[in-house]
Image 1 (cartoon, rainbow, N blue to C red):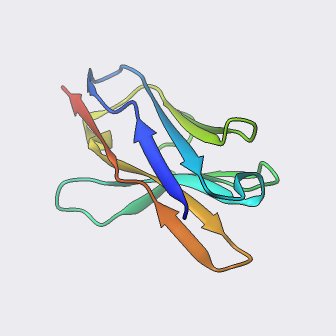
Image 2: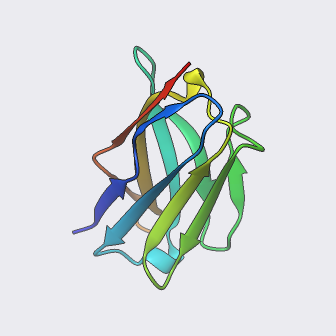
Amino acid sequence: QVQLVESGGNLVQAGGSLRLSCVASGSKFDISTVGWYRQGPGMQREVVATMTAGDLRNYAGSVKGRFTISRDNDKNTVDLQMDRLSVEDTAVYYCYLLQRWAGDEYWGQGTQVTVSS
């Protein structure tokens, strides 16, 4: 059973930085696609950033140049470095893992990021 546990969510002032981390267990992490999604108040869940097993990164246009996704296959972790945060980045952030060969996807429980003006 795959489990994803996020950490690092917090309250931060606009312009500040946060680093989210997610650790995965029970997965073939190194050959999985991983990523981060978010859901703001009254909003649908949206993709923030993804990273394939081959280290191909994709970012939502709203975070490109401010957020950086990275992974450590030895530690089974995927991190999201968030810089120059704005109020619009306030959301619950979810870690995501896709086992493309099996068609299975997994989600963490979410971590709250609140950006104050």
